[in-house]
Image 1 (cartoon, rainbow, N blue to C red):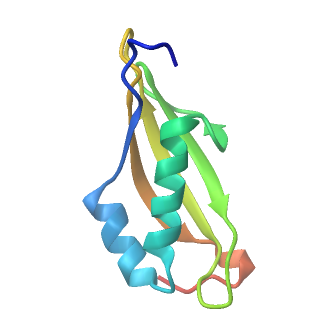
Image 2: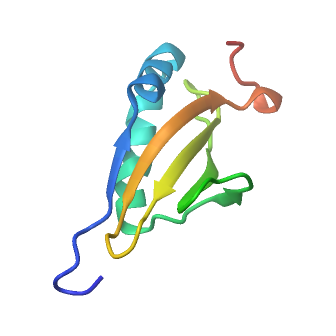
Length: 103
């Protein structure tokens, strides 16, 4: 990042935050750590198809713990030039095939 460039801002949507609280087991805390990391590296994870305009959709997985299932986190990176962009963590889901909770 150059000296005059604003940092990328990452946020967790209300829907994703509510989902994290429903999952429990520290899900919100884990996604908060990811959110902070995304501000430094906005293209973590695997890029998904189907983005519109300048938006890019990514998914990443957070490994489970003894109290929280593994999570799939989907986020949108919207970076119109010349701004560095905004990241919205939009969807958090338990990974079902890894013993995730049923929602």
